[in-house]
Structure formats: structure tokens, C-alpha cells
Image (cartoon, rainbow, N blue to C red; front, side, top):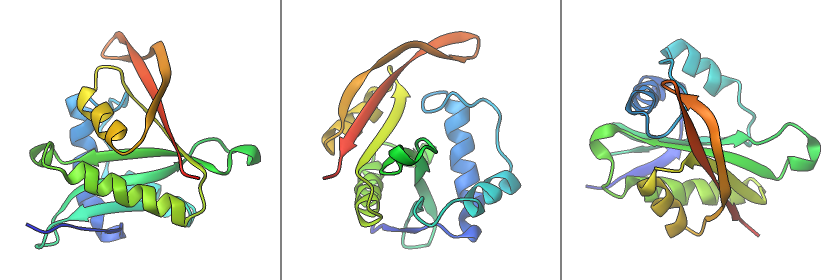
Length: 165
């Protein structure tokens, strides 16, 4: 099957919301615990700057199986060249190479937008995610120990980066 990566549109919000809520429910990719509504996610999409793109990956039937975003890292001007990233793949499509296709496109989009560096935070236990990021050149910067609480337990968070220049 062929897949296409493109800029997200408002009509993608039902897919984006479902995929994000799967990630929240699975407890492997985010410290968030409250499921999001389509209205909240539409507001999130609409409130982004032109540089902070959201991409989706879809199949030949226009079914979205994942999304990724360039997010503000820090609002201070000195960090304007640094962007935080998010990536989520639908539960049934994980492990099939879509994450790599989507992340490659996100990296190129960040370069096209003039960003200098990508950063991300991932659970220290997310071996599949760390393997994906490392395969595309990200390096581990370090680990914040007991950095956030998920389901009443402190979770270690690994910080990774990719310099684009």
C-alpha cells in the first residue's frame, strides 16, 4: 500500500483526535490523561502559527493513520529556531514503518520552515520510539528522573534532539 504525507486540514480532526486519544489511553507516549474532544483539537489546529505545521499520513483511501506536529519549544525569541515535536500513529498501524515516513517528512518540513533544531521528550521506557528517533539521527541528551506523574507514579522522561544545520 502507498502512503501520502500532507499538511493537516480541519476535516482531519476526527482522525487526529482518535489517534491522540489512543496515545493517551495506551500510556506509552504522553503524560496527558484526559481524552480530548474534536472541538479542542480543532482549536489546537487553528491556533497554530504558519510555521508550526501539523502533518498527517494517509493511505490510498484517504484514511489518516498518524499525525505529527512542530510545536513551540519556548516562547522566548532566543529559542525561535528550536521546535518541539510530537508524533502519533494509530494503534493498529504501529510498527509498520509509518512513523519513519511521517518523521522524515516532519524533519524536512522543519528544515523548509527554517528551524535549527528539533527536540522531543519521550518516556524512558519507550524503546520503540527511541529506536525510531535514533534511526533518523536524533541523539539522547539525557533523562529527567521522576519528571512527571502518570497514574499516580513518577515517570522518567528522556530528552532527545536533532540539529538540522
